Length: 341
Ligand SMILES: Cc1ncc(C[n+]2csc(CCOP(=O)(O)OP(=O)(O)O)c2C)c(N)n1
Ligand SMILES: [Mg+2]
Image (tube, rainbow, N blue to C red; front, side, top):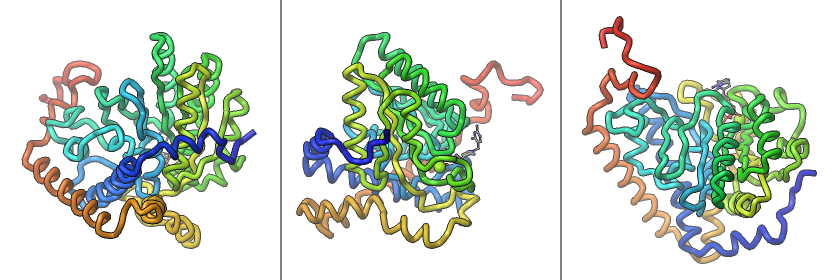
């Protein structure tokens, strides 16, 4: 049931990308990598008040899936889909404000990487509950369908989330309602420290699509163009009223699960195998072969990103932290008097 080979029509999506688009995909992935590195430096200096889940190694999934989505489409990121934010247009300053707990951040200091929602950019805030975004995406897609518009919801989640009830309930309902949603599983082979082989009785999560009568496809998650092709095909299907698709992007996180868990117990040969498949290098080589980008151009992109990170961090540091009282705004009710707030 799982489709492993791209269909002929899928190839047309990547073929339609101009050199500028390809270079922009490269820049977005590189920005994601460099931002993660900078955030980890802040974490090491104990200056990061919130947690983060490094996306290094997985950049192609968020960029490929969100690239050229339309205004009005909705993205529901996982805890690790940082690149969805860049690709939808969130700025470096907004992201620094969010992870540094600044007053000017979108949720007034109450967010971390994936808990920031940007409705204007079509990004719903992620939940702390692994997999909760899957049924939520079905709700978003149901709303789209009720409005009779041709937008879509793109929902990201990990392989661990695919073992939760939310996944099965969400896919079942999405199929029954035939709603415009694309499920993008970022299968990085681990649920925190648990290898997928221990927690998952099948090899390909995409096979589960058959149970819910929707197409399922395994995708090379290190190849941003393969992700783009597969998602664009699924998006076109959803916009045409043909319902949901499950895509399983095989990928790997290059770092530990979390800054405090950077010690890595994964097999060194496995890490070596995957780091050779760095999504940024893969697209970089492709661009070079096409004559679209040379070493000097890459240096210029690196320099522009470094400057953007420096400038934005400086600006972020010059603004105050959120007031403690803001921890209670837009949550449940009034601040608890006993806390003296
Ligand atoms: C319901 C629930 N259980 C456990 C956790 C703690 N937790 C946070 S991330 C994570 C692992 C998730 O694995 P996966 O879905 O594969 O995503 P990955 O971290 O690999 O990107 C766990 C168990 C949680 N946040 N929510
Ligand atoms: Mg995982």
